[in-house]
Length: 594
Ligand SMILES: Nc1ncnc2c1ncn2[C@@H]1O[C@H](COP(=O)(O)OP(=O)(O)OP(=O)(O)O)[C@@H](O)[C@H]1O
Image (tube, rainbow, N blue to C red; front, side, top):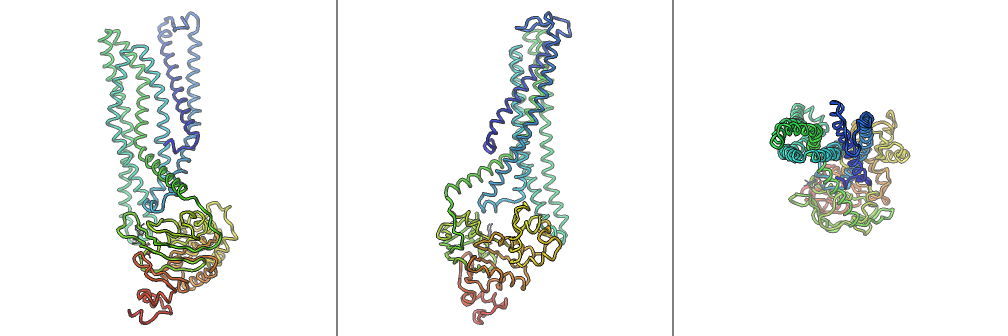
């Protein structure tokens, strides 16, 4: 995990560990001195210290007691200051890990992102990172303070009574080993269960909220509740188990302390008679007073690390994978800039298979999309149109063959290529902000160029409608754009794609929710881009692509025919039938009958 932290963190963590250990040491020294002074104070005996000599005679007992008290106060103040400083630094670590994780997700290849559930990613980046820092990093670092205490007590014990010290250490070591063997595996399992079921709960909630309308109408609210109840029950029980397991060591150690009295008393008796028994028990009591809480906290740290480790491991792995991928991309492909005009796109023998798919989604496609032209991909559902679009967008990489833009392999101009693309997906995703922010895809309102927003909205035939609404382009669109109609959302998506003056406009079923008149107006506005912008359309509604320069008809992942609309109609009976059903001219009777 240390490798995922910002520069200088190791220095901070080492310093923090050393400071915690030093404070613990200070604590033990102060308490040790009190213990040494007490018999003299209580029994009225002279207090003698090595080097210092007889303190009572020198009148140093009271000043020393005051110094010790001041030391204890100083330790408390320093501990609070250290805590304050450290928690702020840990918060910075949390932010840094979250940033790197999110960047890693954003950089990971599209196929990998398709395989991950968004709810899981949201939980990892937010809750998971928090748990990683507060459940693993912070507790693990507090371990050094405990180790400091442990070391100090052990030294004192060894100096005072070596035999008793050895027996104490062996005995407490065995207790700790027992706890580690019994408790730790259980804590790890509980941690994994907690992560898995809380992720599932989040996923079910996201999915249920997304389909709330259908769920209400289909009267499935009860079923959803049951589902959420079932997953929540598992995660709540796992969390309860985690609390329980973190408390058990305390009781075990307390019991061990009592048994330890008997054991050490016995050993003391055997080695030094009744006086030996008393002093052994006394020593064990003093040591236990510091050791047991310290061991309990160490055990709690171990429990916390075990239960939260599952999140941490996943996060560190995701960061490593994402960053390795980023490094691979940069190393393998030095990026070139594309010229600022539309360029030919050429596919050479391109095939693509989704992971674990039995047959390829695209199979040996070789086509040319001329610069500034309007091309359309048509074909039945599942023919491979959206896969083709994702390959053209550079989101997917061909499993075989290559894609070239302006004569360069797509991989080596990818950054520049993506900046030149305007993309309108089948489902436009809007965020809960103003129309203008959604068009500019800007979370910060100051970064919105309002003039460009207006121009883009006008081309997408939405400006007039918006101007007639309260708030105009500053009106909020609501969660997921629910304050807009389906057609308005689509037009907003088109405006978003046009906002950056793209050189390539890719529209995947982008006008399916528009009425005929609006669709015609949008098509005309986009037609005006002809020559400057390459327009790539995927459409089931054939009126949209009636005037495309080239229509590619896809079937089973291959381009079965291409040419103008009328040429494809003449060549492909299925397509001719669809055109006839859509009432489009150019359909030949013969081909329909075939
Ligand atoms: N993420 C994925 N994982 C596995 N297979 C996929 C994935 N996405 C699509 N496919 C499969 O790849 C094939 C092509 O799908 P694609 O979405 O490209 O078709 P399409 O022509 O765009 O269909 P539609 O018109 O219904 O949107 C289909 O058989 C589909 O099941």
